[in-house]
Length: 199
Image 1: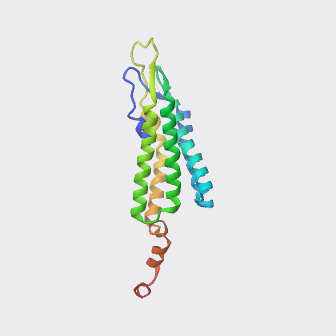
Image 2 (image 1 turned 180 degrees about the horizontal axis):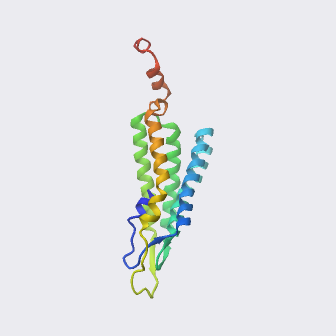
Image 3 (image 1 turned 90 degrees about the vertical axis):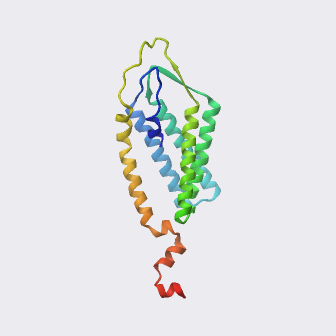
């Protein structure tokens, strides 16, 4: 979401480019932190100490992804942040990550999964735009005209190919795995012979 959202970010008085390695590092922040968080709750359950620790780690990783991605911006200006708003964005990231990790191992049923996904989507979007609201750009005083810059899409979009493929594969698995869609009890009913179900 962050990388697509950043395609819409412009500063009228200056061109914007991205540092490729730093942008890639921000993507790795998100992948690693979410992977560790999901692994923690998958293997150790959602007891409060585990869930809160995993949620904190994952939320800080997602916030780190956002602000590392912002540090990758290259323009004729300096980025400045309002610290209370930054703190609010990090709080949203941690709360959203904790709720998402709980939902990942606790929510059963297609409608419940869709509802949890919508809540998480709103929370992650809220974190991103709260972080963006904290940003102000101080232009360098001697900028005579906007600096030429490459298209952000040429840097950002190629990095989205692998995550997009992963999401499609993961979504396909979830759609066709009755244990993930229906839950254990409903899946067992679906596997029983019709005569056994009618009894």
